[in-house]
View 1 (cartoon, rainbow, N blue to C red):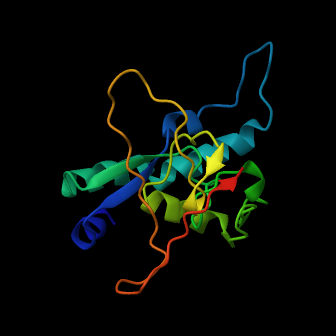
View 2 (view 1 turned 45 degrees about the vertical axis):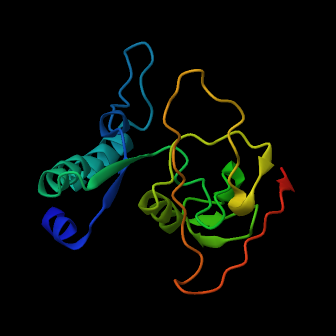
Length: 171
């Protein structure tokens, strides 16, 4: 799989998952024993058997400089159509319905589109949303840090005439 990814794609993005924390034991202590220890152990075996970390490492070795890690937080809560982040948009484990624009799809597909577009990490404060539901940063650090570039998902075909609305919406 890593060879196929390296040969096929110019840029490969992985969701940066903390697999060690995901597979922590649920055993607990003698004073406070864990609950559902067998189920958690089975889930841990299944996660480790998939070899996510090994796939990431080998792909990075075969495609040096072309592999990026996308921060995992909010990739499953961000709407891939408008960029709005809302906990209530995730209706169930499998269903995603954006409460801002009404976009509907499978929750895993929505998260995969966000990872592919590099959309992850911490949300920005939501005071006033601009076109596409992305909010402007409220304050700047006193240190001169590089500004993150927003990687958008194109909503039109190349060569089409596009009208862009500049109206601002109150959040």
